[in-house]
Length: 148
Image (cartoon, rainbow, N blue to C red; front, side, top):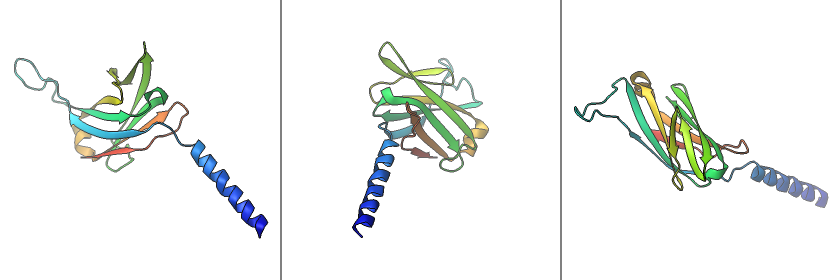
């Protein structure tokens, strides 16, 4: 009986250690999604009416360990049946950047931004945006959701 108890305890401790080793120190908070439209300075009208652009702002606790941001834009949570975007983190002269679709945004402290553009059809089709990161060890962070 003691042997069984010690074996079970050993297995439990091993599983806890493995689960702890597989987690990441990078965490996401506070996803905010809002439209970002470029307007003509003279007419005040949108420059391109075929594209719907969004800014996706979020907070990250440990940008030095972040490798990629993944955006799944779809009809359900965790789905990319409308579009899948990958943004990469980079560093230059001590400053971190988040790069997506030929746009580079400075990461200011804990604040990061991704700019995403959708066609009118894609914008009409999506209901959810799922955001998560991949850290420098290839581990996924927590997921944040936006519901349209």
